[in-house]
Image 1 (cartoon, rainbow over the protein chains, first blue to last red):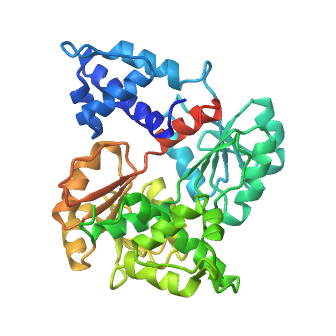
Image 2: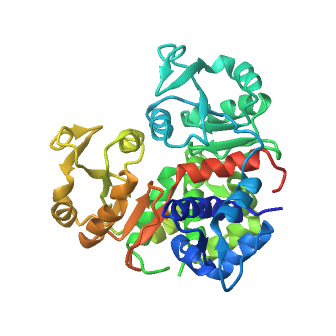
Image 3: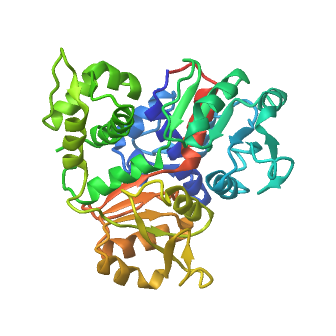
Length: 206
Length: 206
């Protein structure tokens, strides 16, 4: 059992490690990785021990080996396609942001209700009718979906996605989705995050 | 001192309470609010006690009074404008998403390097040259900024914003920003969040 917070850090570590390796550096000390990531060296060591990887206090970690181990833990056996539901301005921005930038996270199918979008390739991704979501998800055995639909459609769409076999949702709507326990939901409510930043921008309470 | 997690929940509670009041319901029990928010009643009661608000086990909380108290804690004395730096597809999507939807979080100034955008009104927001960021932030005493620039510009822009008086940044870039301790940074790395969802979509480890 790896906690969500640890998984998130492992993903972040991997970013740093890839850049580190790209700079031609083969080894890294826990305090160096900790410093890059803004956590304590103890947290780095504990996280890596959680996935059964240990470095040497004297020589640090072997970056390539560390990357391989993190990959074994995080990555699906085969690359998995991701679905995007809602090709409005946010959905298009996500497609645009990802096209090319993240080959490891391929958004292979988009869905919308707008017939003007259905059947088109939008930012490199085919847009299907939301009515075909079950068929397309099952055909591609897609388990992860990004929800970028209007709030009033969120719960209904989440239920269709769940019935179609989705087990992970990245939810950009402000709706608190009701889904079965086997479905993981990560909420990204930009307005809530922004309110939080506004609060901390004017207070020293942190 | 209110912890970031508590602030985030207070913001979320406020959403639920406004909807609750809009439904014509004047009182709410901690277990009802907890249920709406997906936390335990104990967490709700503790969070509200943190800001000095208590309900009656028998009659629950007075929603209007609760909203007023939460507002006293969260809201700046006067509404504050927000700056957006980077009017690419993500920046435009954020403007589009906010136009109208969140009058309490007015994005009053956008910035870009693209001279084709500078001087125009984009999704209802005036777009300035990034070179005027100091002047515009100071003129509007803006303390909060949304960072939606390319990764390679992130640190440089964050430093300019900090020098211009920004004290809170909502960072959509994958860059771990180095800023003075008085500046609060909230990171929203969509790729990291998506990798996390992909991981949990295929595991029961949660």
